[in-house]
Length: 98
Image (cartoon, rainbow, N blue to C red; front, side):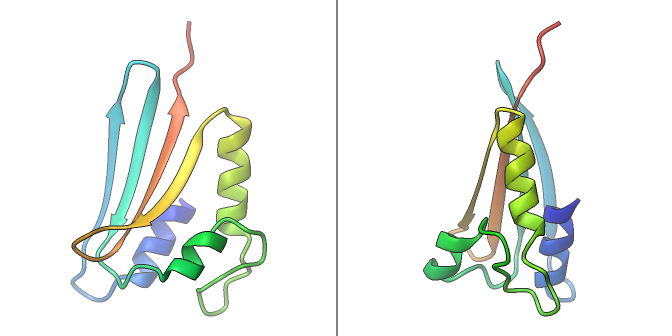
């Protein structure tokens, strides 16, 4: 939810926020993409640090919590700028075996 809220917040009126899910052999890949301004390189380096925020009024805890939860589930999360503009967060979570 945090990733979607951030994408919506940083996208302008009429911009697109896209959520997609891909199933791999051992993991699910969730992707949240927006068409906002993206991030500068310094921001990308600090993105998941507690109390770092680029959002006015933000606490800087949302992405830190996302990363902690994903790490504890054995997954990975990363953020990058898309070549055509906007940002993308990818969250990979291992599938549970029955």
